[in-house]
Length: 420
Image (tube, rainbow, N blue to C red; front, side, top):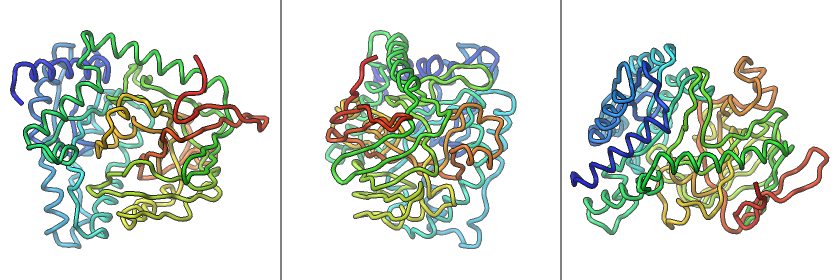
């Protein structure tokens, strides 16, 4: 993993993260974390160092990193006294909130072991996750409002690589996963920055078309799925690039293939069937379905991980409803790879998906100034949770429902059904 070619790819990746992902501005500070506030595993140090170098080369005033070891999270679930599970290192939240309040930037690096909590007590895992979500809620609220320029990227963690490529040796698995990351984030292109700019333009055209149509809802039809969701008045279709409240245009996810908005929390009817397993809090949820009535989840079933899925839905009132709807063609570069990444940053870009829980405020016109009650009354959804799961496939058809109640094709057999 220390070859000259790999090091050069890491350098290009870091440059794209700083220039395209964060669009870091001269004089900005940057904090690097693992998720909203947790520490970055030390195995990601080679990428972090390249990001730090690129940040300073582009005028960063100060770069800080929260470090940790994800195995410590598993050890706590296994061995900590049960009456201590309410405790949380709030200094991490304070560090990130300090950056947000100054209008600085945040980078999150994912790459977790998908089986981190595998085999552990579901009740304890759910408790630890809920305490985490409660404590990081201020960070998530600011991120969901695009208060600052932020970005989520991935690094090829050792355990993650072995999960994706179980038939390879640890070294070969990690090498292959890094290759996949570089390819899906366009780092293998002759000019990654230009390739990203072209891609952003293409996604923006899709979002503009959907924005102009202002559908009142979407209807999904596929194997096992017959599902209708409403779209609230003033919904905004968002693609790769967004404008933060600090005035910086940024690309929140690398990779990204989606065009997304928020559904109306009160209008979802029918059943959706997952088309990809969901990796959540170190456990895998497989072959599951979710039923809705009047916008609320009424039933979940799963061949594996049903208890974990139910705990997710029961996080709070808002986690019984939806906060995001995203459209992704079944032929996306990630889907064409033909294997599961066990990481939502990648898997959500292989398939149309919806998210249980919190809606991003920037997907509803004028919502930044609304109270939580007003946001929910307008069709938005507030929750500690926000978890995407994949429902698209090459057999999926999606219709847009106009304000007059007629239907127009949006996707057919998993592909876009309109030209831009």
